[in-house]
Image (cartoon, rainbow, N blue to C red; front, top):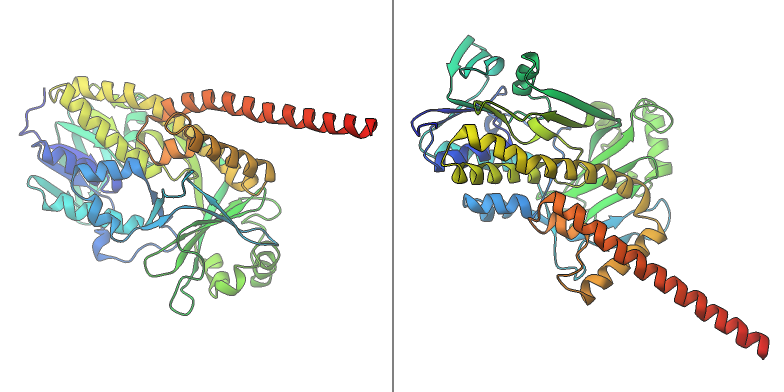
Amino acid sequence: MTARRDEIAIIGAGLAGCLAACFLARRGYPVALYERRSDPRAGVAERGRSINLALSERGLDALRRIGLAEQVMTDALPMRGRMIHPVEGEQQFQSYSAAGDRAINSISRGALNNALLDEAAALPGVRIVFDHRLVGLDPTDGALSFETPQGPVAAKASVVLGADGAGSAVRGQLLAYGLLDESVDFLDYGYKELTIPPLGGDFALDEDALHIWPRGTSMMIALPNPDRSFTCTLFWPNEGAGSFASLTSPAEIERHFTEHYPDVVPLAPNLVDDYQHNPVGVLGTVRCTPWQVNGKVGLIGDAAHAIVPFYGQGANCAFEDVVELDRCLDECADDWLAALPLFQRRRQENAEAIATMALTNFVEMRDKVASPVFQTRRRVEHALERALPGRYVSQYELVSFSTTPYAQVRRRVRRQHRVLGAVVGGAALLLVGAIGAALSRGRRA
């Protein structure tokens, strides 16, 4: 068992790492939080790399446990549904919940990270060390090696937690030792951010929705910001027609947006500049196993199971990891040798479930939300939810507005879809029967 006086090292002072530092400090552990970047609270945000977060119930549940939810929500903007933007015609609002009263929350990743950094720094026993890039890790004794602007630095910890994201250096070290297996599945899509500034001092689009421009093989989304701007994210193929590679000149960019996103062009005066200078990010799913080695080194959040962002659950899932790890430490009396394997057993199936749902939701957002068939199915689902409260709940509500484990959500939704199929099929048979009866009456007339 790890004594309370033994220091825990967390690699990565992003969202998961800072939250884990808060939870562990409250358990009485001294924590060293190492970050390869400079202190983000003192710098300028990297251009085109925000991807606003959609904070929902799982993330809020974790923040409530450290008393930070109310503060974080002061700058959040609730989004109660999707606003669909067709190439032509009227926009259409699709509520996330049957009653229309539930919302996911648009929040700046940077602002949330800074709030968590401040919270961790204020706790006794937490020290945060910036500009430390992990270059060596001995998984047998917790010896750590860092590169810093001042030169090499050595450190040691009783337990090392890798919370350093999809490109985790901790995972890379374990892979180099042959202690885990890894797979990284990249999409043939990337992402790029644009900005819609305020219009006349107010939001240029409805601020209580997540805006989607579904275009079949590609899409754009937009989330509101407290300064009344919108952060837009293009999710486009990397190669081929209509891809990032195919558009380079200002004329090509303007022509493409005028054809495919005509309502955006007059609202985004810096569109061409943003497009040409903001980077293209990669999208992929990371899987590995095991997530821990001998109770000495563990992985949490994206370092263990990065997912694509199309369900808005990456940060929410990582926060839920921290809550589950804390629960495992409780049940194992702070014996990390028992707690880390238990954590993996409980979370791995759930991480795989949300990874699959996120990939499926990309197809839904990109291809299906504008479809009359999809819209009819959603209306039937909402009708069933109202008719059978608590008994029939849509997948979106279970994922975003509850803490039901992701794997349980998938199993429940499969059962519900069988019911939905029967209802829709039954309605179709009744309709066919009614049409047949009407035709028979017409023949007799």
